[in-house]
Length: 134
Image (cartoon, rainbow, N blue to C red; front, side):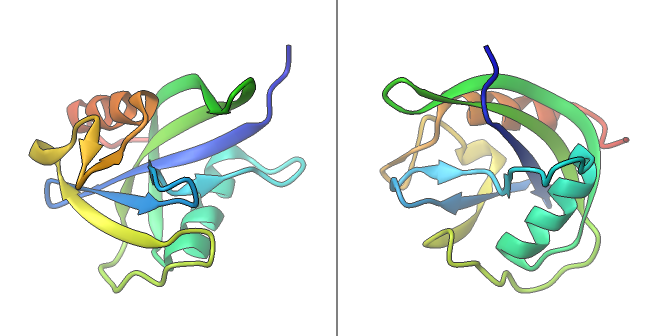
């Protein structure tokens, strides 16, 4: 069975990971769907800029899993480690309600009372353990 694809970025900077609050009131990793024929890394660079205003370098693949967005509605998540190319203020898009740099030592199933889906938690932990090379 084929599922919709979403490319996500685990952006770690100064021992903190960037999380976005979505319309379901859950923490999310920045990213989204690639355009037809678009390379995963190119899609992630574009999505990161659109959702956060930040320029990133995409590193290694850190996780791939199925995420049940709504009951019986699954999305295939492919997550890559990312590094920040230049520091700057976050310019949040309309797709998310809030952005937060969360310390890696604070990352868990709930952050500030809101859910961080298990697959994203796993991707963050994997990225935190890997060198950031493409």
